[in-house]
Image (cartoon, rainbow, N blue to C red; front, top):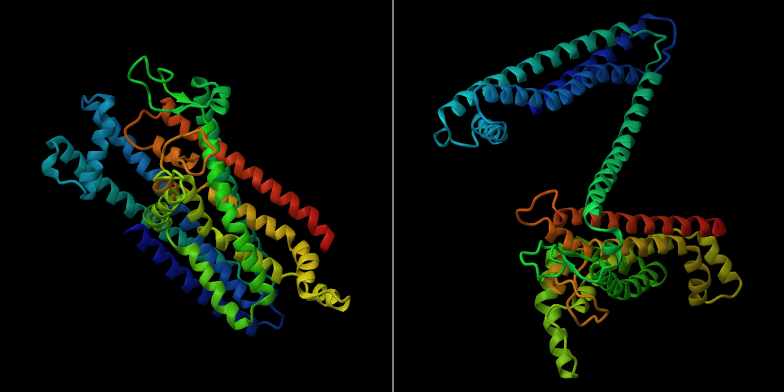
Amino acid sequence: MTTASLLICLAMLASFSYFYALRKIRQIAVQSSHKLHSLPRFHGAYSAAWVFGPPALLTLAWMVIAPSLLNMQLSDQLVASGFDRTDVDILISQVISVAKGDLSANFVSEQVRDLSVKYANASAQSRWLLTLTAIIAALLGFAFALRRQSIRFTARHSVERLVRVLMISASAIAVFTTLGIVLSLIFETLQFFRTVPVLEFLTGTQWSPQMALRVDQVGSSGAFGAIPLFTGTLLITLLAMFVAVPIGLFSAIFLSEYATPRVRSVIKPTLEILAGVPTVVYGFFAAIVVAPFLRNSGADVGLVLSSESALAAGLVMGVMIIPFVSSLSDDVMNAVPQNLRDGASALGATKSETIKQVILPAAFPGIVSAVLLAVSRAVGETMIVVMAAGVAANLTANPFESVTTITVQIVMLLVGDQEFDSPKTLAAFALGMLLFIVTLALNIVALYVSRKYREKYD
């Protein structure tokens, strides 16, 4: 039985146990003169939890442990057969591929075919053993839950504790996932800085991460000065913000304060469609339409624009992140209490004065959060920059020239056949760590602004 079929079977058993426990506790309540401590549905939920929970946890643990045990057993068999340990991983992948049917047995040796048959039989036995164990655990859980059914049983408290544990577990998964990401970045970044000095990385003005093939090449072992990447990222982000913030904020003011409900119901979804357009579509638009238009327009007035420029990428990226500013700012301004507007009108303020002196200050924390979210989105964009701004690491503040960003270089560093412990590959983790620090700083600023001004207008 496959894992999906087993979970479906467990869910069906849990449903049966829910209704059976529900019926039983109602019969007990009819026969007894006392009132139930908990509603019948809590008794049913308690029974279903015992039927589904432990077998499901057992199944998840089995899915993690069983393949590792089978691979260890297969590895020992290969080593015992005389194979070198350096070839064991390749042979294991071949055995597993043949056993699963992903690879034809005609393309492997006879010994690999024999081992694949044994591996398939062992996997089948493991699945059947898991199925039997899970069903026995479900039946034991069902019997245990039924034994506890009584008038005075605090089923509601037990179910609420279970829900609390589930919510804590979900929160812990998010926390540990974040912690794992941070630790992986830290370890690989420290390994990178053992090869490349920190000051060279943070203050260097040349970025040439490919390992040099000649002594006369830049740095002879690659140049890892990240200043050109910082400036390129900052330049494109600023250009995008110059487009997104004014248009998004003015759109939010119009939708919140001036637009009729009918107009709002049309314009707001239309603006939010921009957030659903794939970034590769924006990249094509920037490369095919915007960049040639800017180059031809610049030539008409005597300006020289590169075919791939920061200006083209920044303008299109600004259009892409308009919904992040407009939609969130609109929601924040709609959340401003109506009595503030009424008070301003009672004091004789006009519509525009109310917006400037009441609505915008009251919504300022939310607007700052929306802008910083848009900045984070712009900093993390890759596809538009690749297609419209290029991949050349140029140290320039000229928006008419080709530049690149940190995210683009992370992708470029991890493309191709590279040794994982080489400086070129590890540089991607250092850049990722830098992006993480920048995003964290933006979140801290947004939290500080929100807390400071929320107290003023609550």
